[in-house]
Image (cartoon, rainbow, N blue to C red; front, side, top):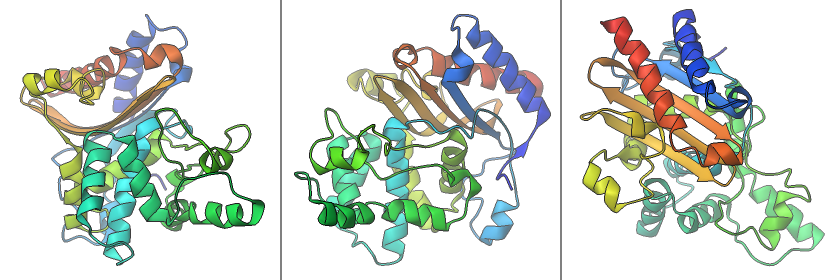
Length: 311
């Protein structure tokens, strides 16, 4: 059963915004996946005091476009690794070390790849290095599946087909990391906007591991919309992404992903005059990767459709 309830009216709003965006972007529909949730009131810590079955029974309204399609997630996969850290620590599988806290902060707040490498090593008990002979490599690869096995055990239908076992790279992978990708890169990370939205929904509502663990993740995801701060940080994960379409006074929690063939974002937004909403958008192709207007326009268009309905 889907974790959100498909709302025909929201579907119509999404379709109208897609049509507008597509006017200047031929082929956009095939390049873009969207999952959009709209809440009647703020879901922050909604799950506190509820059982998980009761929480997941409170399905928010939503709409989507190719939300089940698997795409290369770029740095959005770091949200999975940060969530896994909280799950491991809740079961005393990973100590709460200062260096791990620093790495988690840099992985999410700054999208650091070196920080992500340490987090993946600690989650899986593996390290990078030269290529390995067949038997040692098989054992190493098995360890690298621990995060995948954890999420599969949740039995979320949105997880089917997802893959989160690779580090993120500026120039790599090399050695055993390249070996692990497979000859045709068939073992690359894969995520859908539906799965990403479900995970972010759980974090925002306090349903991931515990309210306290969720709050720690939210602290990492919180973005400043202050223009001076954004100007001082060209890689602020706001400008050119969903947060770039927000009016002054909004609140934003998000994790962006960007590389030569992708521009993605996963965001929870609270803005005056608009119902709270969660929006995940993955866009693929070299053209979309360079398109700094698409995600802000998508966010503004959907918010305007909600504001018009309110007024």
